Image (cartoon, rainbow, N blue to C red):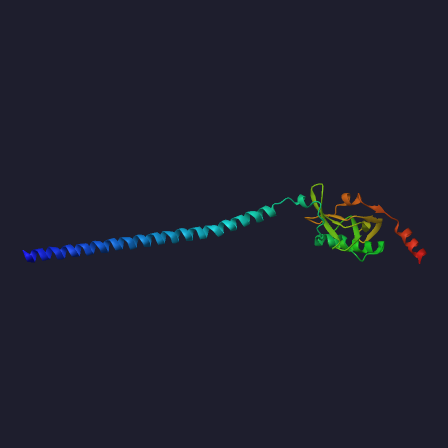
Length: 200
């Protein structure tokens, strides 16, 4: 009986120890699970936050790109006409009808036309503007111009001289003669030369 009683006591102690181990193991496992969940939630939150910022930045950039250009209607943003307009029309060293005719003949070889207007102006002396809802690039002030007309492939003549604001379409560099002509002031080049000669 004594032996049986001692065996029962040992089994009871072992069961108590096993129970304590299970409880401790359960607590540790629960703590690990809670810690893992906290890390998971934190990582998920950290990954989404920058993405949200990037998305917002992209939206802002898209909004800036899609802003209507009419908002800049009153701003004098200095821009240059595109290369084709500079090659065809802008010649800051041109000083006479004869030079304008030569320029027009050379332009006709590359880009045939019946009429050509040569402006004495630097490409940098232009600014952006809106005219009737259209984006244009125009000279900062009235500049000298020579309007030349083709007689045949090798012969041109100057038909008009004066001052006007040079206006070009921004997207393709096309010379907007109608809008420019509204600002023109015709002159007689020979008469102006005679006046200069009298002064000196």
